Image 1 (cartoon, helix red, strand yellow):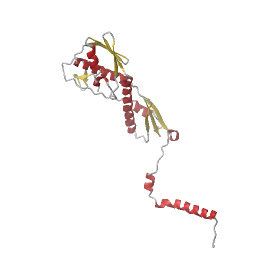
Image 2 (cartoon, rainbow, N blue to C red):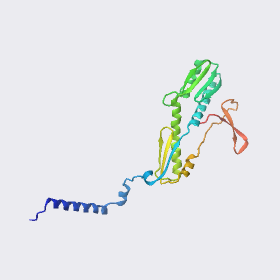
Image 3 (cartoon, rainbow, N blue to C red):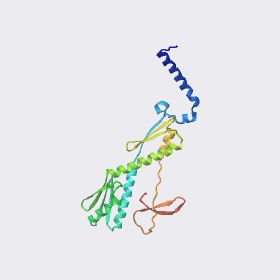
Image 4 (tube, helix red, strand yellow):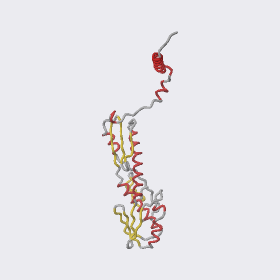
Length: 237
């Protein structure tokens, strides 16, 4: 009777197992196998590329939103037949003189559509001082504007990057006012800087239907006909 040591039996088993492993690919669907392989994206440190850190200038947008709010407040005051004068904007503080009942003014300014954000917090705090109303815009109001600006900017950057067909870009927010862009394989960042550096601004305004309107509008020229003018609301949508 033949006798094999345990070491020999184990060695034979290992050889058979290795042969079986190498033989398996002959029976495997290679397309399915390759499709399910998880691919690892090489970072900029391994394959090179461009790294950009963009900063959002939200100051003009904040000022525009405050100007829109002033127009909205003026419209509401006139609607309620409340007399006012000397509107003044200094940084993020608005003040104006009143000649009407202050209680009525406070009631108008504290309406939901005037002074409340979607989360229920106030857009501005109201103070009274010697016949003057002072509106101080809240941090929540400013933060909400910056948050929306960041989300819109991220979408714009993604759309512009998609135009050049860069594969596997990384586009993420950094903090409250910055966007990180990593473009693997793109050695020259000058073209992408030029593309992302262009300011895109499209505004919409309502036409003024009331020809007798005296406040809250301006005249814009028709580019195709210099003699023609449009009366539009100052408030930008």
